[in-house]
Image (cartoon, rainbow, N blue to C red; front, top):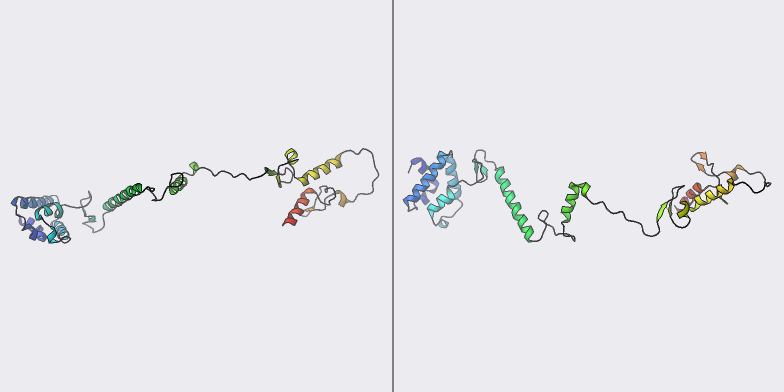
Length: 249
């Protein structure tokens, strides 16, 4: 055997002596020589044999020749030649390619286990009542907000509701509100204005009317209100609504 090859095999000389077949010994020598010719350092091969032989018990190796050819000598790792069992020989750092391969295998194994258990392959959760994973639906809605169904607007129970066409207050659209779209106070104010603007049937004598009786006593900010008051009230419909709102509050 070539002295260089024999020196490389120094960590496993004990096993090499137990190989009874000269043919197997020549195969071992050829395997070492081939790796040396392909650029593998003798130190690297020496380290590989030392590391792998240290991880087994001598009693566990039943066929030394087969173990040397099939376990001790082959390079373990990815397609990157500098990778030595997941570690880069030149730098001593972990091989990123091998790390990704391990992660992919772990993910594939977990994916298969979840499918067997009837779980979501992505999140590992039980499907919802609709047969879909709630987390998957949420993730899809986040990625594609336009495709997410808009929540249905809940219609209030009871009679239809709307807004007064004059003051804008929320009203229940029933009765006369279906015809004029006004709240009660605005309807009364409109009726009073209509009655005041209608021509009188006959002239009548009336005493002097004060400004307080002709206009609302309320104020819009700092400006006196110019609207007519409601019948039997000293304020108009708008200020009456404000008074009622203050009483409720």
